[in-house]
Image (tube, rainbow, N blue to C red; front, side):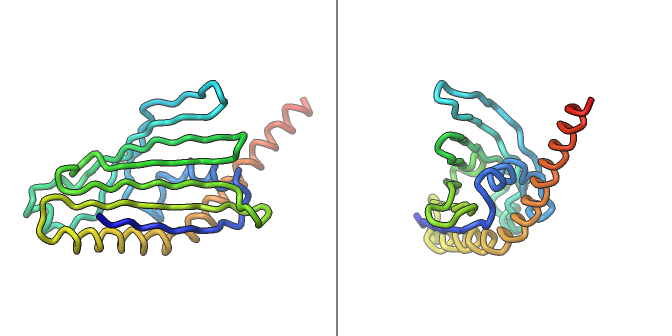
Length: 184
């Protein structure tokens, strides 16, 4: 088992970052997620939004591995999330559904307002990778965590710029629509 963790500070308020996180798929900067389906969504008694989504992905598994093990290139993951608007927290937990006999990847992301930087958001990320039943399990676990780490750090800045821009445009469009309705 390998554990990878990271923290990242977004120079945007929590509301902007969490809106962007909800809208990040489909995303041309991360083409591995090819579909997102909402299985369940509800607001609990405390006002928290609880969601369960299934993500359809392509992990970029090499063709030789697909042929060797007889895998399908499309895989699925389950994501459970909790948005707490009072505490300003977004927690996302995901785990793979496909390939569980070979590997389990459990990821947790928590977005909260930064405790010391105003109008900034702190992302805490953790992934636990366990390869099962292979003699090279430790090496494969390290390869997967290295891939997670490199993809996370390489894409996060570009994705956030795009997300913040999209969220800002969405808020501006909504405000102009409200202004038009107020005028009428």
